Length: 106
Length: 117
Image (cartoon, rainbow over all chains, first blue to last red; front, side):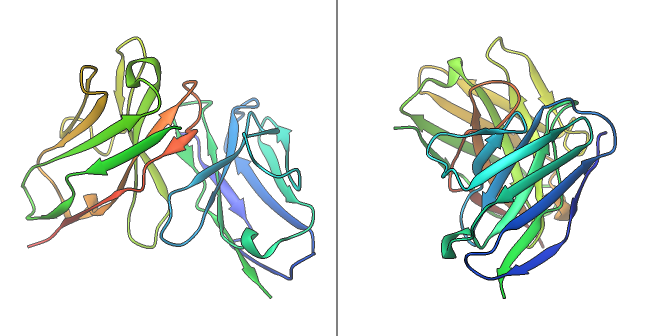
């Protein structure tokens, strides 16, 4: 099983700041990596697929990068609605998710 | 517009059975990769099972032999039959649609399953 490790566990920032979230895979997943956003009481929402492709309707402030084992989700300038939990997910070998990064307001 | 609605959750005793349903609209389940993903209270996401377009079915090791995924194309609905339930199966169960076999583009609102005596 491919294990995804996200860091940091919690990230405290202010609106307008830049957020950088990391996801590391225990073995290469090529570019088969996605990012999801989940707000309390809601289902996850797909943000990024294939490591760097924004899903339909996702604002341009969200960007993804990386390949192989190291991936990054960047939010260029945080809006109030961006404070949530973010998960990475791989499909290099079945489906596994990272443990999540909680982005909260500083 | 794509819409997924899960039903069937509830409180069940350990060892019991429950059947979840996911009613889809705005697309056809037979033309999508349909999965169940669960989330234990306060925890992360765990993939449970997938029904491929071609009919192949796969399960996570944690539920293999106890859960059965099925698809009713006439009703455009996905099901999850859960038998021999354990306390660790307690979670919100989400139905999720994949346009490809790689990711989950659309999600339902989830249904809570609580396994407790």
